[in-house]
Length: 231
Image (cartoon, rainbow, N blue to C red):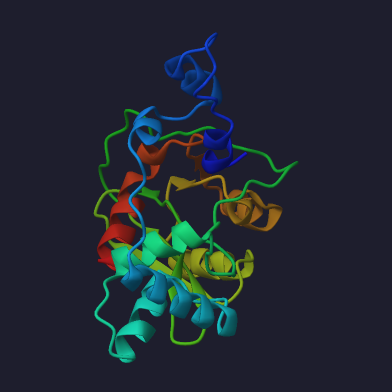
């Protein structure tokens, strides 16, 4: 149940339950109950009407592209205002959301082997993972393999589908150019727990290590790379 629906269940005339207890039971903030909502101004209403028209014509528009289109029409508006109005209208861009690390049932999960280990020499490679990179016409998936000691990118591949083949191609490229590491660390995404990927590592005699579930610190070096790439 949405917050406005729960707020509508509040009974101010109830003598048995105070407003405080009703808010606690309904899971809503008292500040939103005591403070009256600000009425929408005429400018917001006109802007919301135009946002609704654009969204009906192009339902895949998010707040960034919506703001750009409004500015192209000569309207002075920033993205935060567009975001606020789109939330108020209950609309969001239709399309796939970033969801690249999905575990697969039945795949074997390996323990994390890099805890309390010193990064001496180029003996531990990883971790690879994938992120969505927007292009002019679609989304592309990027996988990168880094050296755990030097943080150097050893191999990377782009793909328009998030399957295991481009991950295996990056792995084979890194092994062919830089040789076999002692340990290879990945996250628990279905691409990296698949038989094709773990089989390639096991066939090369490489120890397999995987991050703990929700343990971003186990993957901190590649996460830092993605931060720099996005910036």
